[in-house]
Image 1 (tube, rainbow, N blue to C red):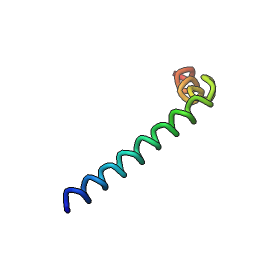
Image 2 (image 1 turned 30 degrees about the horizontal axis):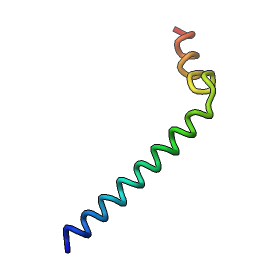
Image 3 (image 1 turned 90 degrees about the horizontal axis):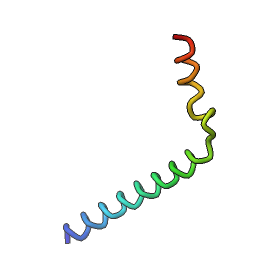
Length: 47
């Protein structure tokens, strides 16, 4: 019984993590190159 509960808990955590990673990838694709790297480019230009 404990194994079943543990397996269900691991499955729930894994599915939540996979869902969150897909959401992050989808959100990241909406950013343009300038939006994604503008802070780093500003820092490099100041050096």
